[in-house]
Length: 261
Image (cartoon, rainbow, N blue to C red; front, top):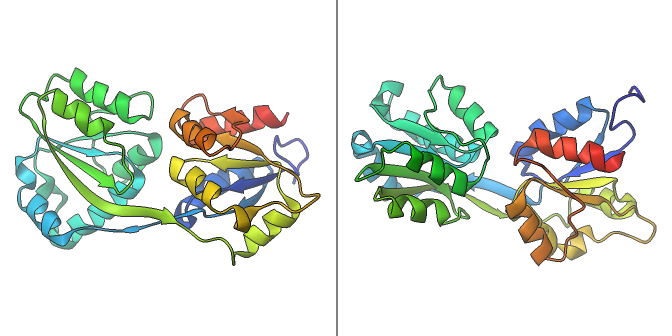
């Protein structure tokens, strides 16, 4: 590995779910980092089948479908494709989303995004949808996980939209006590640890035994992907050593490189 790479020789801990860590890990590896995967959370399908059936039956009556995460896109369309054999069954639904990863997941299916705010927050997504001037009495379907914030739905309803929510996945704490990577982290520490979600930060705070650093282990700088994650870290007495300028993996890595210089 070339020493000219900005993260050459640096140990970086990634706390995303196992099925999401590869993208961030690959980006860090390309910059020379030694990546330690600490999957503090796990994401799995969680759908109430009766509600799903109702939503799919009435899909043509919605004006907007809103995705707040790539997990939502993946799990929703897995069910959609199980029921329908033609993407045109979406009808005239307009698509809104937040975040570049979510947008990439949608575009991979050759679907057009009509509303995506410049900043990846629920508040900005709600404001962007309101600015379209299309919400008065519009039917909006919001695809959620179990930990989604209510602010998006509340703001849309305040704009006179008729909002239905469909939970398609759940995020849970992943016990790291038996993970070899956690053993390595406890013994040696790292140069930095990256938190890309509030749920990962919360899980870190709840697993002190599994990740408590041994005497002599290097205390990592802790990086946050954005204000919401930083707030969760601070509430749990996790120091925020650096924060991404915008809530994206690219901005998080940029902040990491700057912090380690």
